[in-house]
Length: 260
Image (tube, rainbow, N blue to C red):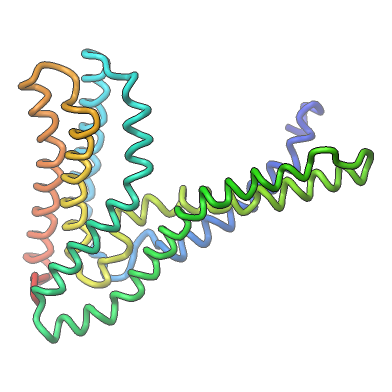
């Protein structure tokens, strides 16, 4: 950018954007650490999960390339983007309530002490999602101040100030969600501190919820009916099998029990 003088005007926006992204990333890592408390690292499970994710991506792209369906993909992605956080919250609440009710009284008291930190991180995440449309609307209303602004240096300063005040909060929240979404959904809002098996359980429940949501809105995947049914069931079944395998390893290697 320094080599091409025609791009010098991008210097300030890039510096401001970098600082917004940097501070948002720091806050996201503080609220949703990459290794939350109570999480048990299992390299073998993580390796199989990565292989399964890449296989699912290859199969999806292959089906869309062979049988079509690219035109419906943007709508499905937008639908998942809108509903994913709220479905994850509902799934997490249901699974936590069931596991909390099944726990022994002593274990229940210990789980209760860790429930508020996980709930606080969930409030951060869903509060940020709620702020996105509100901040976008507020920024659009604030941009009306630029109509008929003053000319000269004072007009430029006024334009820059209004742009920063209107859009900086919106982009900070967007950056926060970009950095927080992966760890938040992967670790089920830090619920491993409540019970080590909760992230796997929430993932298994959530994948079935998404499967039936996609079925109700877009139908089966493209292709012959038999193949489409196999693909539709293959994703949730494989994720559920991996979740139960992870829980089995937690029980065998770390002594994790449903009620203990």
